[in-house]
Length: 68
Image (tube, rainbow, N blue to C red; front, side):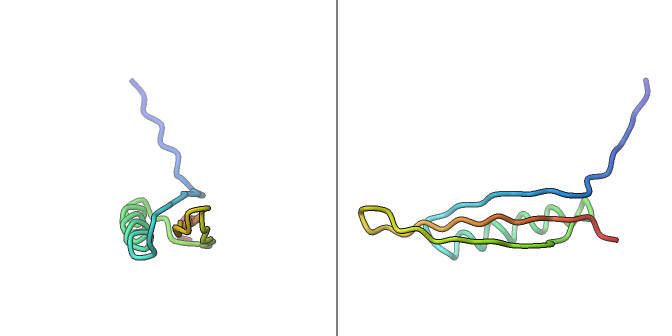
């Protein structure tokens, strides 16, 4: 039996929530998890949307890269 390990160099994750506090909590949780596999935040993009009933909806895309 042979094992082969490849390092993850780039990873993009998507997040969504009904409020900013929950969105931030979810992103921070994933940042801590990705630190264990030596990934750091490279770029964050976020948006806010209001639906036809006036409710706010938040989303974010976080690009993680391997530490150099």
